[in-house]
Length: 417
Ligand SMILES: *[C@@H]1O[C@H](CO)[C@@H](O)[C@H](O)[C@H]1NC(C)=O
Ligand SMILES: *[C@@H]1O[C@H](CO)[C@@H](O)[C@H](O)[C@H]1NC(C)=O
Image (tube, rainbow, N blue to C red):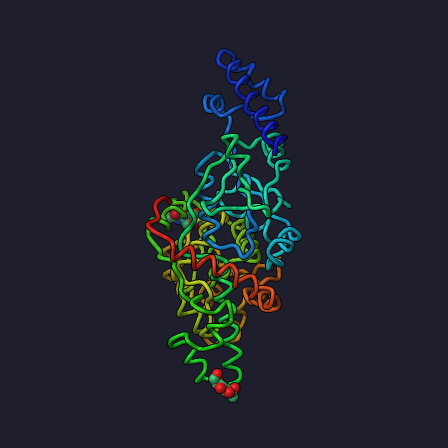
């Protein structure tokens, strides 16, 4: 601990010296900062055009709009947001195997429109060594973290060092969703399916009606997980949207789907779709449409949750919250759609065999194109991953749920963004 203090004091005092020198000589300051191999101190930084760089880290496993909202808030505390994504090994060692491998988590985080840079293999708990690397190599000004305490294995505050150096900022936890909650919804969906497979509808009904069924209550991940705390507000939608329409002569590309459990496969198909035009309009199907085509246990995420995840993606310009199943002539005219695309790995490819092909109009107009999905990930892939890790998750969920419950029981008024 002594050496830690010493190191941070050195850092602080050299910043102080830098500030004094810089009082008169701005150019000199920049040179000094370069010689020191570190970003110039904050006070000076603000006068110059140099961007304020903020850092946030996380596992981003089962990424959802809560993560996106945290990244949005972090970005608002600076000009550039650098995100550290924890390695698979570190996650496995600290909380059990991740559902999403690092490669996919990198794609997900990199696609969030508020993220400027992504660093792979960040440590699970921030170390002094890594923090110094952030300040010197990555020119980070502030380290950002949520208001939930982050403790090291020895019980000390993981961000104590950054706090002492005056380089720590905090954001509010996003209300209403957590990975634990989503995993719970998925496990419940799988249980529902296996019960219906054995045609035991009475037990299924009981499970739904008051949730007092043993299976739900003792599963560790069952009880109450279907209840979403998420309350969609128009303000949140505004925060997530680009607020811009297409420019003059823009070529508008349309893609529709469920976008349930938004994953790297979705990101990749959206990236390609966006590349085919100037403005990407995404139609998000209603919960009813999805239940009707994929079964009552779907979607896992509701329409508003799915819309926020899609809106947070940098390749998306606009969404239709509750798009019709069929792409009509009227819709194509209203939105001036030049091209309608569909991915080859989309979950529902049966439409070609159906009598009412939803893409019949764009096909007849010659503006329909099927695009090759670069990643063979479907929403069912994600659900299968969870189920195969079921045991590990149940254990992990039991612990996390207890702390979630404590949070909601102890929670009072929540202010902030
Ligand atoms: C149906 O569920 C009930 C209650 O969980 C159970 O007692 C019964 O054995 C189940 N029947 C079948 C055929 O699985
Ligand atoms: C409709 O889209 C085309 C590009 O496909 C563009 O040239 C045209 O200007 C657009 N029309 C309007 C009214 O924006």
